[in-house]
Length: 179
Image (cartoon, rainbow, N blue to C red; front, top):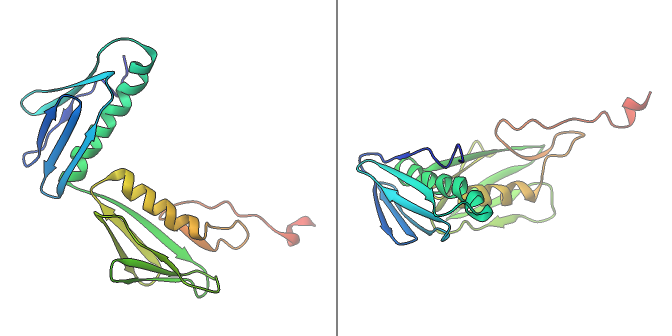
């Protein structure tokens, strides 16, 4: 049995879950999310918990069990608390700003990079070098944060670029380290 899959998902006070076959809709103070789960798993709601069970012991059902439990748990956490990713920009002259909903990055290219967030994702900038991505969908928050980081990933010689907050970048010595 999947150690992750068999754990019950606690439902906070202000969150409601509607289950219609394989369709799961979660509604909370921050918003509403819905997802269709695969046929290999079934979702059962008790009074204040939700359980995700396998329908059979096939290989696909075992693979989907823990994944589906985590997806539903992330939906519950997203509509109750939300998710946040922080990125840091390092480099001389590198900066970010928000224009309307869009993020504008100046990161050493001859032009500015404009990033438009999907619906439900908010972008904020602190001190011109810290970008904060927030939203209720963990997958969407992670994807937009990865897109922002991919504009200028941190390089190993000077450490310039966009990195996640707390990310360790392995540094190389360069030509001087050859001696």
